[in-house]
Length: 395
Ligand SMILES: *Cc1c(COP(=O)(O)O)cnc(C)c1O
Image (tube, rainbow, N blue to C red; front, side, top):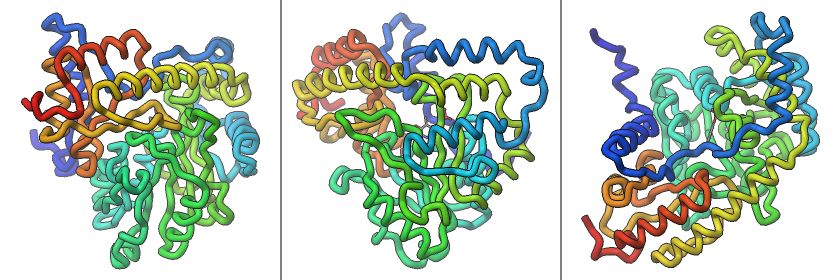
């Protein structure tokens, strides 16, 4: 049977593919270390689990939840947002629930991108930005993120003809996969650019709470007038160790929130009420687990910086996220390096080009593995002479 052209237009989800390769290798008896996963390794905190247990027994939650989120959930989101960023939101019009950030991104892109439309997409980036644009019939115009420019896009490099035509601009800070961070001054520039060209600005703030060394990530809505053109996506996945639960929210521009909610209400029937109740406990609740996990990520980061330094990768400690974005050894493509790591050392690292053509020549490691396993990974790299200055280890 023939599938639709739209399905042929997209690749298999890269992490599903990497997972298959790793599994196949593990089945041959290799002890595979997975530095590919971008998901917290710690369990969901207890106060959230307890709220879930109680909410399951409440028959209200056995029925369809209201579209756009329960009033209590939206209330809690508004309260958290105000406390965290000092921005007030109208829960009725400026907040909508999401089945995670990935779902929100896809549907927002479907709502704003049609056949032939342009979306301005960072390169490298979370793969959904590009793939959903292609699924919607649109064309991604890549904005390169390079270490030389601190992984911030150069808006002045976007041709006027492209900016005129673009409908949507996507950014994500703290950034996956580069760990780049942005300050308010940069956000001001993006807001001004999008206002000038009448483009919807979508900021993916998935990592707002995973920040270190005193760095605090801003919201795009802290920019004066941002609500005129910006929507921001949040998820409980990373902050509260809830990747399996599937819950997040979108906030900001009323029309964009309403358009996203409209497309969603035609496609899905929102988030299980009990999960929304659990998320409320997360938003209102204590934050010690966030501090605890951030401390873990910092310890792992410091270990990685030290050990990678010994292997020839001189890197600055990241200020946010749990990713490190590293150059592949000279003469090795991303794909070659990723295969080399898996086949010689039994270590999974996603190739940089999985995040877009601009990721060629890089690979990503994530810090979602405990220190012992991380250490073991660096031991194996040392043993197999996988180093940065490594013409000699070329495959
Ligand atoms: C993890 C992630 C998301 C969304 O995760 P969900 O689990 O779907 O909420 C969105 N954007 C980026 C950049 C991410 O890394």
